[in-house]
Length: 187
Picture 1 (cartoon, rainbow, N blue to C red):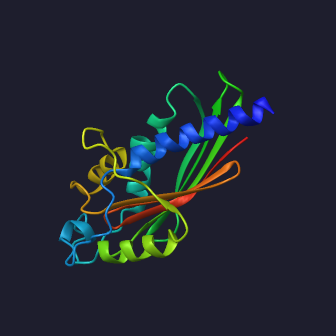
Picture 2 (picture 1 turned 60 degrees about the vertical axis):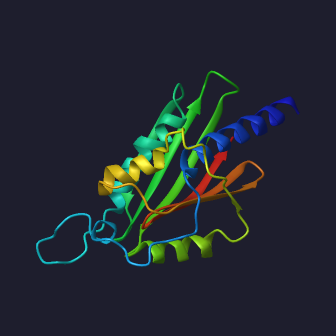
C-alpha cells in the first residue's frame, strides 16, 4: 500500500513538473493570419512549406523532457519521423534512487499549416482534459524554448491540458502550429 501511495505522489509531482514546464501562457486566442515563420521555417527554394516536426520533437525532448528528469537514468530516448508533418517521441526513464520506478513517455508531434489549425486540433483533442493554468511569468517555459529553437520565434499561442488515469497521465500541449500529445506511465 505504501509503495502504491508513493508511486501516486511521485506521479503527481512529475505531472506538476511537466505541466508547469509546458504551460507557459495558456490561451485559446490564435493569430488570424499566421506569419511566414509559423508556416514556413526555412526556404525550400520552391516556395513550399518546410515541415519541422522532427526538429521540434528533438528540441522538445532536449528542452522539456530531459530537464524534468535530471538525476534519473534515461534508458532510451528516440525521435522518429511519422509522415511529413509528424514525429513521435519515446523515452524510458529509470529512477533507481527512489522506489525503482520506471517512467515511459510516448508522444506524438504534429505540425499544422497554421496556428489556427493547431488550435482547432488542440481543442478537439483536449475535450475532457483539465486545462493547465498559466505558469508564472518569471518561470522559464522549456516548451517555448523548443518552439524558439525550431522556428526562431516565441510561440504566439501556448495551450496545455492533462488527464490522470490511474498510473498513466495523458498530456496535450500546443506551441504555435505544433501540437504534442501522448501518455506517461509509471511502474
